[in-house]
Amino acid sequence: QEGGVASAFRTVDPASASGTRRRLYQVKGRRTIRATERDLSWASFNTGDCFILDLGQSILVWCGAKANALERNKAQDLATAIRDGERRGKARVEVVADGEEPPEMLQVLGPKPALQEGSPEEDVTADQTNAAAAVSDATGRMDLTQVAASSPFSQSLLCADDCFVLDNGACGKIYVWKGRKANEQERQAALRVAEEVIARMGYSPRTQV
Image (cartoon, rainbow, N blue to C red; front, side, top):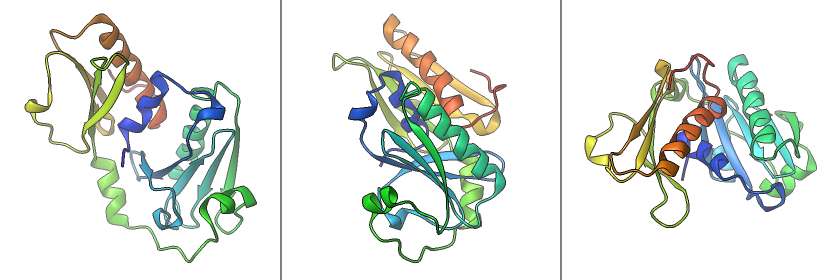
């Protein structure tokens, strides 16, 4: 399942709101917030985090009863970024409290079961996790593929024909590695991706690229 930095890559070639597939993001962390795509199921939820249910025309921000204030704020920021970026403003953002799920949410996920509590250890992991992805048009279109979900990153992941985006936003930096044989379109796309990662992951505007 794709998540984190790879999820942000979809905005390079945004689809129309009507053609967007349904997605679920988990938003968690204490110092640095991570957004990770999860299976579209109640089994992905817990009461300690926030979740974004992207239905295309509507974007629901569900906040667990024990989610912290930073997660709540960043989840709303991310939902707004999806609306203003991928949807070009043509979507509705709604904040949903735990226990007040609207019919459209239940229609997609089914009846709500008892949910597990979030893990503090997972919050620590979320603060530290990084990701790396390749930017390539070798197939005839610009593809963005996650090649590593966490650090450390091996140099063997890098290819001279492509560009790569290394997400170390938790430490205030996003790295763009440009292969010596990468074409101009790939180089430009990689820079756009890096900027979008900062917005989509809720990193500080001071994050360096």
